[in-house]
Image (cartoon, rainbow, N blue to C red; front, top):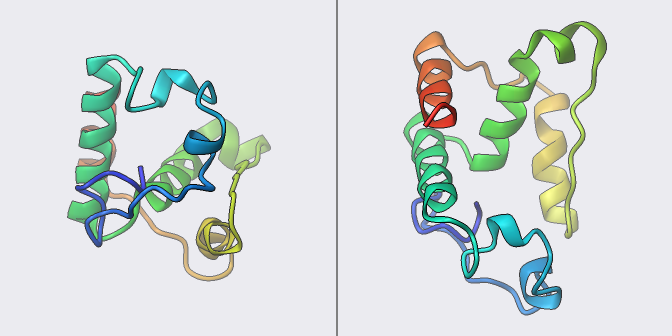
Length: 115
C-alpha cells in the first residue's frame, strides 16, 4: 500500500531494502509484478478509501480489523513492519485515540471485498 500512488503523500519510492525488492517471491499474490488485476484494483480502492478518510492504508487496515467482533471480544490485531517508522505507525492507534470508521466507510470496504 505505501508504494501506491494514491496513498496519502502520493506514496513512497520502493526502497532497495523493501521485502518486495529483497525477496521477489515474497507475498507474490500482492506483488505489483505478479498480482491479479482484481487484487491490484482492490488495493487501489482500499488506498483511496484511506485517503478519503485522511489516514494511511495501514491505519485503515488496523481500524477495520478492530471493528470485527471476533477481534473486539476475544482477539488481537497482529501488525508487521520492516522499519522502526512502520512499527511506530502500526502501534500509534493503540497508544491514543483509535481511528473510528463510520458505517459508510465500513460499507465501502465491504463493497471492495465482495467484488
